[in-house]
Length: 170
Image (cartoon, rainbow, N blue to C red; front, side):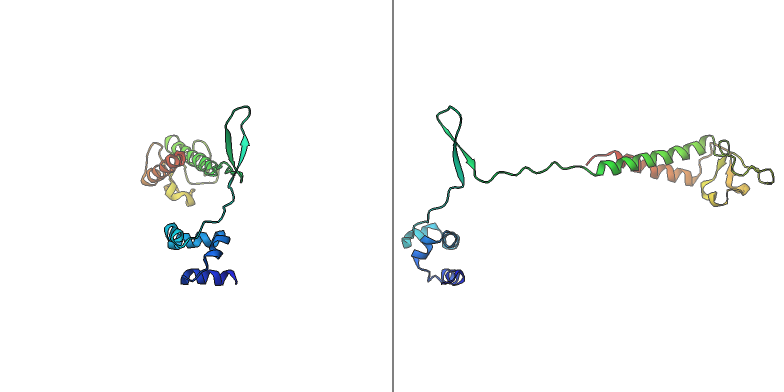
């Protein structure tokens, strides 16, 4: 009889009790379906289960310790890959925040002569307006330092929020 036929007989209730006593897996199925009490009423005895542990002496003491037969695997430590990415985000936002603050306080025009060429008619003041950065040689692209405009404020707020979130730990 094939194992499939034995399972069919078990589900139909026509299984031979001797087959249950000989087959541990079939007995466990019958036990979970019908319960141990019903099997005992039928006179079915549980088959011998192999020991899941081995007995080893414990040095010089008088008692024995049961050790599991299968070694317990230890999970490797979880390496956080987020730390590297958070550090990059933090330093990038710190650098960009510093650039915006330098531009606002003393201005890029005092540090880098971007449009003060001898043939230029544009007189570049100190602070570069970030919303006009593509046309940096225009007189509208430069203002006095220590003037915080809307674009500078929004960028500083976004960069500060990103910097704070990159510092938090999971």
